[in-house]
Image (tube, rainbow, N blue to C red; front, side, top):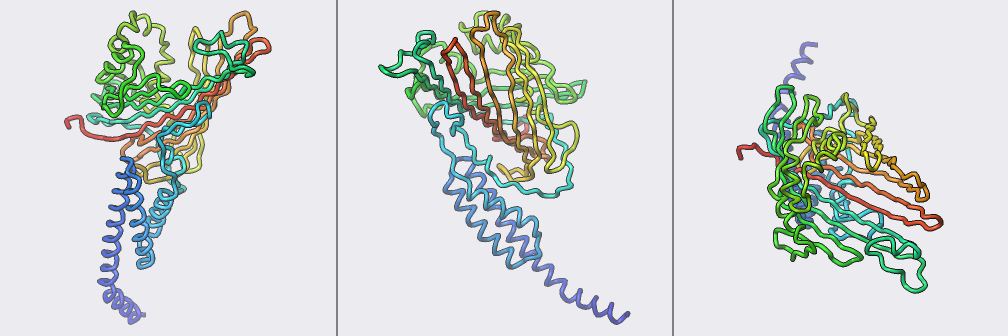
Length: 431
């Protein structure tokens, strides 16, 4: 047997340089492909769709050639990249136009990611979804919100609704439509670690771009960049939007990442509200701690995470109830599913899909002649980077339908929302 071992060793020594050379050549080609993909992702994030597509096609062709020339080079990685490129090339380009109000789904937000192909990866890998918030880092984000509202008012109730005109002759109802587009820049700075293991944050508001239409006509437009003319019916609105830029809030969390308090809220409201909020202190008092916590936990990214590591395919549920003394309560139940992995906005992300249901419990006056029925649901997706411990992007799509009965007459409303938050930069505070 010894001569056989010597012969095998001789072959290994003889062919080792060839194998190493092939591996090096494959690695070099793969690096070039990866560079093309990263550049394509950068173009796509900036809205340069044609340039992104050119890069993706070139990368796809090169990757297929690499797969044919070096079939044993990282086959799982190569397949993952090919699947990603196929998904990017098949995704429909985003549009910035709103559809008809009340359709239940606006397209003001880039929703291509909702159809992004997801890879199962290592099915046995456990992932702990925990937003880390590294001290000394600044997380810059862009929030985009699109909303479309449609209200149908029967003829006999048209005079009860402000702004509603009488239906045309022969019509049984009047339809009112409103569309809203909002872009908001945000910067979240992690200032320090607290003694209890939590964090001290500074939330700073940047530029705000706002457009509001009623029945297809622009009634308000604000764009500090000058890309479009400002149309503001109320001077106080202009003051509020201008004052919002640069306004700050301080947030304090506990060791578990849960929000504990919001500092400087009174000063914040006094700054951005101006004469519209003559008593900011009173308003703050009326905002319940539960409502503050619910709103700002979403911004802090701590509301979605399970309390244990999970594998691809697992589902967990989050249930919460927000109370309001005047209005009632809102019960929220959301199912989250770890769908798999995707290269997204230059991050390797774990992808979570969500489906939720909202159950309002409204406080109705003793005279129950006007019962209100509301149906609300939400779908969405979250991209989480485990290596950096941060949320890269979220898309939420709530859909609400409501009816108010006045005897035999019924006012119905449909509200379609799309909210997208995307991490645009992660940098040191010193920069």
